[in-house]
Length: 640
Ligand SMILES: Cc1cc2nc3c(=O)[nH]c(=O)nc-3n(C[C@H](O)[C@H](O)[C@H](O)COP(=O)(O)OP(=O)(O)OC[C@H]3O[C@@H](n4cnc5c(N)ncnc54)[C@H](O)[C@@H]3O)c2cc1C
Image (cartoon, rainbow, N blue to C red):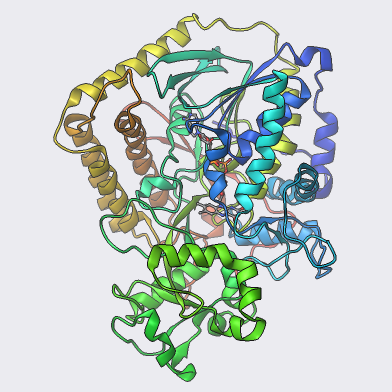
């Protein structure tokens, strides 16, 4: 299939303006004749639903939590980027665009990334107007800090709770529309299928998570803002409920899945402490503004944080500062993670497992004082202390990389439309703007850009060409999708095997981490494919799902999601095997520079890999969208 990304003509900086002007409009009186479904109420979904409601469309918004405010976006700590240049330190829309394209190792689309940088400035204005309490300087201007992969300070933040505050802003906007009747909220409702009629997305099928009732909802357009799939690894920093089900079911209905193997492994997480864990905790990247990362120059077995002070200054290796003097501790995440792994592989890791490095604030506390450090990072320090029992004001934190974000997702064109007409994907659920590695503080930016500033235009353009008629939910396609959803639930409940859903999820996670984690090889990936196939086969014969359908049943919810994770895992392996180069977070050991950096092969792999579902037990078909770079020159990424 020819993948048309619908990139507008013209110079980069004018594309979005021209595109908006050329997009068709729906007049205000006609907007109320159209229904739009938004699945997901995180930053991307809440902002999209609120904006579409404000425009006058009839919106139905869905989430599986008990309130939109509990979407995973609430966990975001460090901040949101915007090219405001308040610091007068050389920032600009072009620089944010350039940093993001380079940070993504030249595997993102120029036009989308530029638009993201362009609307970033509007996001801050919108959020300030909503009352989001961004940190301010003494004189009242908004404060900024730095994040990885940038040499300017462009990150706006609300202490270590930026996602929460932004989500409260978006939720307020959403609540206003709910109160006015323009948005109908459906919490505790999980989308199980997309309904496609005559080639267009015309609705969804959902399950009420309290009663088990399966229902159909019809609309003229459907938006999936359902978040990322990092939990395929079992252990990740994502919220426990984050899953791939909505995107995966859409994939099976014709939406291509792009670059599934691009996973972000975040360098500053609290290390794994044992098999009992079900999730990992991120320590925000903002800590690398002041924290210095080091390991001993020579291995010290089992070195505790409490004994770190015994290692003299000259015996410490501040390896990021040594290897990358220009960016130091603020190199991008993929680079910082790989280096931490390398230190541990050399045997210089610290802590009881040797799988950790130090993040040390002693110098910052000495330089700026305890109160200043507390003011910037107090809640993060408290969180670290509560989880580990160590006091980071007195000794260094111990950190290790962990799965954090997924750059892959549903393929979308410039309008954020998937390969199914009328079906859109926004926020972390789409693959769009970050290439092979996302820079810190740019996920919140993208989610809000998509929801507040892109979808309201692009969906309007699509709806302007749609008839007003509504598809009744007793249409055979809705009925077919409902029957399939019910049959799958019955099958899961009736297997009555020996292993729990978590047993399977953990097995899958171990395989994904081992073979498709921080480093990937041809042999490892080949082995992983066979192992995942075996897990899938066993899952459908031997999983034990407790309880009934007509009740709140988390074991059933999870089984439904893990079954999708298993299938996605297989596709991630295929994608990682196909991409024989290294780029960003995708590190093929066979493709590295003599210094151990990711080595791209531009001639062969300068494309988006968009996978097309072919049916049960069939290999997926690879489609390619060629990436064209007209405004940046492809180089070996260097942060030295
Ligand atoms: C610990 C942590 C810290 C982070 N810090 C930052 C940061 O400082 N800056 C930054 O830019 N990024 C950060 N990120 C990344 C960022 O938080 C996420 O990428 C972003 O919030 C995703 O937003 P979203 O709206 O796309 O999805 P989410 O917030 O994940 O929302 C998904 C929504 O979809 C719903 N949903 C999913 N599936 C279904 C279904 N089948 N049916 C119905 N509803 C469904 C959920 O209920 C939810 O409402 C952080 C991530 C983590 C894990």
